[in-house]
Every structure is written in C-alpha cells, then in structure tokens.
Image (cartoon, rainbow, N blue to C red; front, side, top):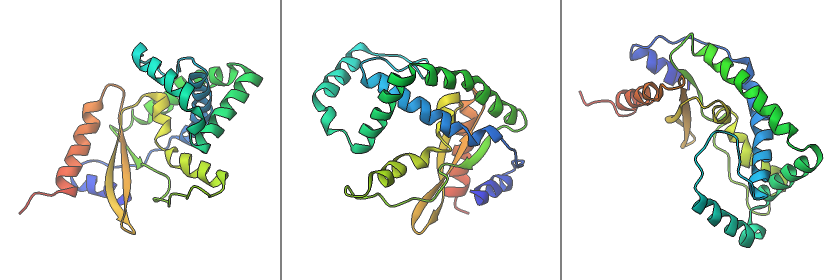
Length: 207
C-alpha cells in the first residue's frame, strides 16, 4: 500500500500523511449498529442505519425467506442475531441511538482530514488474506474471520464517504487491496484516481 502511495507520487500527486484518531474507534460503533440493525431487520422491522429506498416486494420476499429458512442460517449469523436480539431486549434502542449520535462526529473527523488532502489512501483490510476456517472450526474463530476484515471499510458505511478498493500488490500469490476515500459528493474524483492508477500502474501503456 505504501508502494501504491509512492506510485501516485510518481504520477504527479502530492502525497502526505494525515491522522484520523477516530478511525480506530469506528469499527466498534459499526459493530454495535450492525448487530442492532440486523436484529431489528430479522425481527420484522426495517433497518434505519442510513436513509435508504425500500421496496415492499423485496421486503416481502425477505420476510418469507426468514420465516422458512432461519434455521439454515450460518452459525456466525445466528450468533450475531442473538447478540442483537438480547441487546434489544435488555437495552431497547439506546445502543443504536448512541451510535447514530456519534455518526456526525465521525463524519466530521474524516471531513477534517479531507480538508487537507483530496483523497485518503489506506489498506482495504488491516491484514493479509487469511484462510477460510472449515465448518468444524471453533465458533469464535469463524466469528473473527467473518468480521475482522472490515475494520477499514465499515467506517465509511457509517459516514457515507465514497470509497473504492483496488488491487495494489500480491503477498504469497494473494491480492492486497488499497482503498481510496473521497469527500461527500466527489465520487468522480475517487473513481478517476482509481482509473488513473489502474491505467498507468496496473496496466501501463506499451512503450
């Protein structure tokens, strides 16, 4: 990922380091909201993490599938739903309300960084690709493998900043991704930078 940053510098970009301390706490907020929203949706409601368009026919299909196939959900999904339902029974809507109250603060933290630079560049995942545990692996390990890769991506599900992942290298034959994040409403800048990198670095023109 650092080599990708240097490649951008070679393409004429000015590259500097910025710090967003709130980034480290963002996954905790997202995890809390994800289990709360998942439980709400599973219980027959409509999630409200972000303003969204809902189609009644799709919700009806989801409700039918939930009613008939809930027992076949993966153990990890069942565990997350049980956590969310237990949390809702014990605390009501307070956890979700607390996260939603922090969302503007998190958004402002990234906005401040994006006031200094046009784009943020960071690893898509905080670790290299891991092996998929087999079905008999302990549940804690399967749970960890299901959620550990989203630490750098999930904050932008909360803030709504446009983000794009691109391959930037290999480790042991497996891909490493870098993520570009831009200001609200500047999706074209993110896509344009990604396209330029892909064209000039990943697929450079023939001499």
